[in-house]
Length: 232
Picture 1 (cartoon, rainbow, N blue to C red):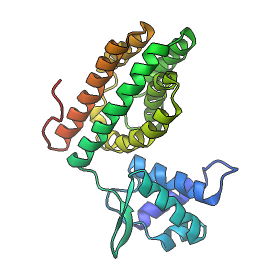
Picture 2: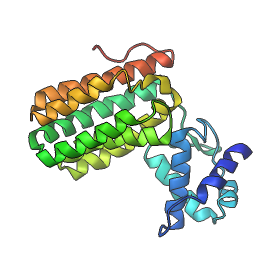
Picture 3: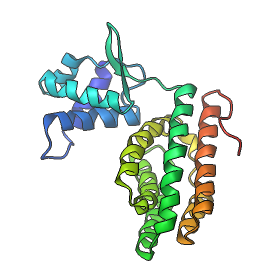
Picture 4: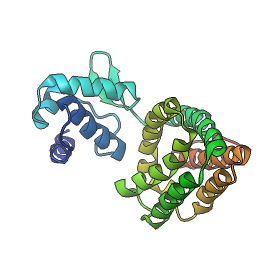
C-alpha cells in the first residue's frame, strides 16, 4: 500500500484550487483508480489515506462514499473499502449500460446536430487522431472529448449525468488493456459516427456507435480471457 500512497501524495499537490477537501480527495482517488495507480482490490484505509493526503478522515470518508456510488469502490463487510475488481461480468454490465445510454444520446444528437456542433466535433476528432495511441491520460481525455462533443449535442443534462460515471468506469478497462483501443486502426469508426451526425441520420449514427462500442467490449472481453459479449 505504501507505494500507492506515495502516488497519491504526489498527486494531491496538483489538484486545482477553490475546492473543498472532500472534492480534492475525491479527485485524487478517482484519478488514481481510473489510471490504475491504485490497483484493483487494494484496500483504502481511511486513516492512512488521511495522513498521506494531509487531511482529516472526514473528507476521505466522503470521497470514498462518492467513489462507491459511481462504482469504483466497494465496501467489504468487516474489512472496509477497497478498489473494485475488474471482471468480465462487470465489463458486460458496464457495456450493457453504455450501449443503452450512449445510443440514446447519439440518436438525439443526430436529430439536433448543427454546423457549430459539427465544427467542434471535427476539431475534437482531429485532436484525437493526433494523440499518441497509448494509455496516457492525455489520449484518454482526447477520446472522451470527441465522444462528448457528440453527446453534448443531445441537449440532455440527464443523459450526460448518467453517461459520465459509466464512461469513467469503462476507462479503467481501456487503460488496463490499452492494446484494445487501437485508435489508428479504428479511426474510421469515429469518422463514421461523426458523418452520420453531420448527415442528421439518427439510425445510421446509432448503428455506427453500437458497432464501435460492441467492438471495444468484445476486444476487452477477449483480452481478459472471456468470450465475445456481442454479435457484430
